[in-house]
Length: 127
Image (cartoon, rainbow, N blue to C red; front, side):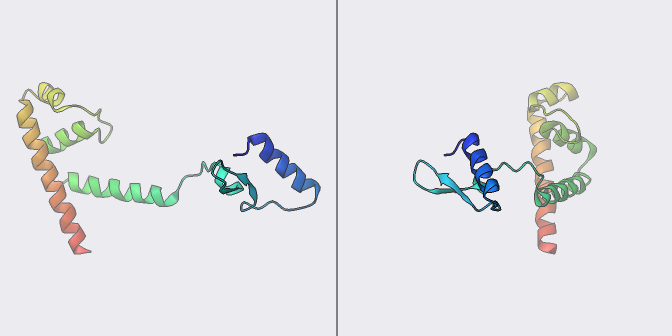
């Protein structure tokens, strides 16, 4: 694989010759003999809009599903999974904070997740 200096020298050489540089230009070969193109080594720090929209849509759905839960179920799910700026906590930590047993937190969490799953499946069928 080419070093950063070798890639830079490639650019300088093409610039001096008046050639344009393409992202598909070959800049060498990897240790297995496969061709490496410039696009393979350039890091892309841009935000993927598709991922951003997908995440936003999922958060909107989650907020919609949370509204179908009782206040206690909402509280436990938010604490368990670190949602809505809550710190992620174990069932034991939540139980201690709420003054209930860990097994009761587990039952409430399971019931809440089943409600969310049911709503999710229902909305998928509506599409």
